[in-house]
Length: 285
Image (cartoon, rainbow, N blue to C red):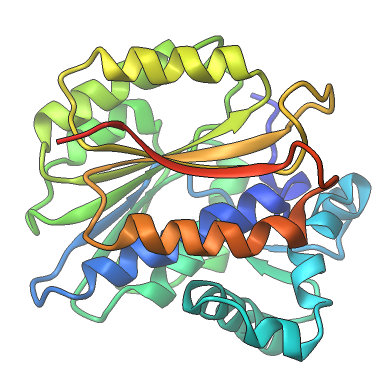
């Protein structure tokens, strides 16, 4: 496996994913009972954008860097979801360095309450060691384990409520992501009331539509798709956009996701014509 998230940390896709992750946790916090957060591909937990991998790719320059550079007046117009996200980013930058950027496990700890627990998987040995060094919190259990096997062993959690963030490297998941669809089906069967958030790249619209159709043929209901495309669909740049499919999204999440993505689009798009966002139900109740 060659994928290393440090090259992509803080890019537009990370911004989108982390903004929506925080909103999912915020919605779960509205009920008193504790919940479990599960991250299938935790990565290093946090990153330094001033180091060689990030500097080599430069992807953060068209992601978090753009938002940090905005004038304070522009930031004040942002929806609460964006303000919450930016406050957490600035918190880590103030604590560590101006190059610091959080990964999803770090964001999750900020969004969770003291009564909630987390389980994070990371399969790559060197990245797992970085994760252990970067994330030290009694609420979060770290597992050096293949998520495709580990997730099914961990659900349903004793808390009964919770969120699974699935963000594989998409080196194995080809075409319409058959391995991913199989995992989601098995996981949902074991935990039908859990919230599942599946991040995926948008490189080829035909492939993405096939993924939606394949998911629609399962017995899983309540599939909400959130997309942001910073390039037109037919632009051969490698990554035109990304999506987050949320199964069993909490109440009010869809509207908050739409508000956040609508605000992000003009700040993150690479060209005005053809860039777009979408928040839609591909499968309803």
